[in-house]
Amino acid sequence: MIDDQLSYSAKEALAERVKELTCLYGIAQIAGQPGISLKEIIQSIVGLLPPAWQYPQTAFAKIILDGTSYVTQGFRECRQNQIAEIIVGGVPRGVVEVVYVEEKPDLDEGPFLKEERNLLDAVARQVAIVIERRQAEEDKLKLHNQLLHADRLATIGMLAAGVAHELNEPLGSVLGFAQLAKKCPGVPVSAGQDIEKIEAASLHAREIIRKLLVFARQMPSEKTHVNLNQVVEEGLYFFGARCAKAGVELVRELSPDMPEITADKAQLNQLLVNLVVNALQSMPEGGNITIQTQFHDRNVLLIVEDTGCGMSNEVIEQIFIPFFTTKDVGHGTGLGLPVVHGIVTAHGGSIDVKSKPGCGTRFEIRIPLDETRNVEENF
Image (cartoon, rainbow, N blue to C red; front, side):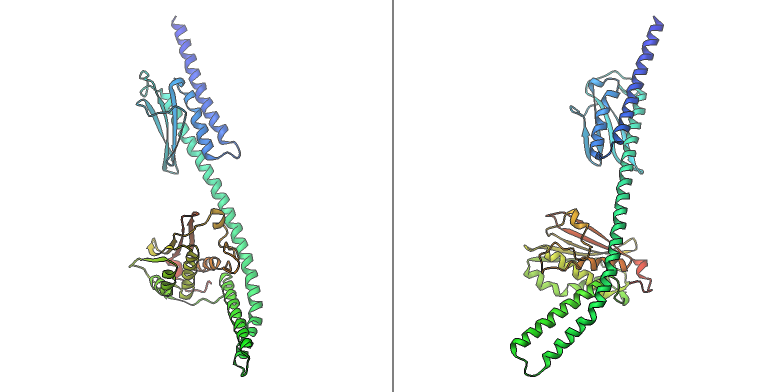
């Protein structure tokens, strides 16, 4: 009789171990499936948990990851529960929980076996590993795209610089002769008006070439000690009337403790103007533009945020590519934001863009203080 009881207990223990191994094997199989999303993986893992516990008929499971819950059908909060924390890179990201919806007798941990605690901890670790692998894959893809983007920008920059230099000389001649023709006595009124159009078109073309050279880093840099708050105040001086007319409120939130940086003041002004103009164009029905300056962790920050139409992720990925524009023909050259990118890069800085269709756009320019102290020519 005793032998029969021992044999039965051994069979029960073996059955429990088989269930645990089946659960872990199932998790490995799910995580290895190609093309499956993280949400699908987590939801599938939740479904594997109840059958691995001692009372599968009354067991239900839940995984919370970054605030999102994934549950088995019929799950509800119960007193008899077992929880393990999901920790990724030393940071808690969520929990794995198994509950019994019917009261069960106490064993090692409430109604749960010691082996079930080990299994739950193992599941939490497996979920963390899945998340880490997904993050590594996403970081690798992001880095690859950044390298492709940088290579494309470098190629376009060389092409732009070459074209700009080739156009500068003939364009200067056109502009010069147009200005001379204006001074000739006896020029008919209609001819004078045409000459003014030629002059205006030449000046516009020269401005585009200047932006191309800035983007390609071919313009000489004139670095001095600059206070970012002063750049903002001077840059926004002429926008007051334009914003009021467009129904746009211009809000300044300038930190009083901004250190001076060694930078090209004209280029920083150009950067600010381009961002504000871009924000204005995104708000045809009016709105708010907030300009902030901050000093944090030896970085000076310029933040331009609007309440305009916003951008999709697909558009954000292309905004720094020269000549890319979402504006109508004749309303944009597609060089404003590439110029911003060129100026920020030349100052050793970075740009972070956050936007969502219908919810506005936020540009955060970050320039390291130590980098701007270097007065060597690097632009």
